[in-house]
Length: 135
Image (tube, rainbow, N blue to C red):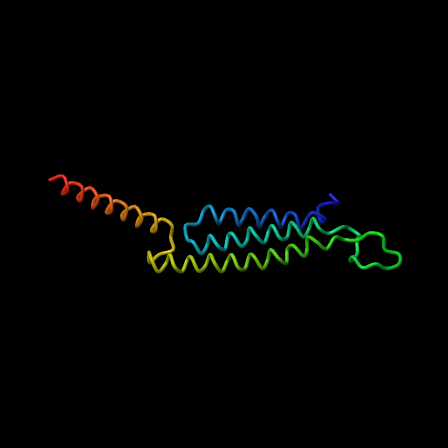
């Protein structure tokens, strides 16, 4: 039971990961899906930073009496991942804006219904054109 507080970061990461995954799967709204992806991404950041910390380790600065150092690489990689994540979220939101302009909705069910109606209309027009050509 003594190790439970030491695992707190991991439990938070797992909870955020499952919450983000649930939002991505369960929601039909594209903006909500992007928020879910952001939650999932944050959980990965927390997990990666948690495994990068060495218990009792100090910053990687050479000094007298220090023999155990924490590796700074995971933290640097997460900084890069945060920048990439912000850029990805911006692109995702830009796509949602374009989808909303095109379909007038950001709900998956509405977009899917409109696409199927457009396919049926195009198919009917093609069939009609072939029928006229055969006459």
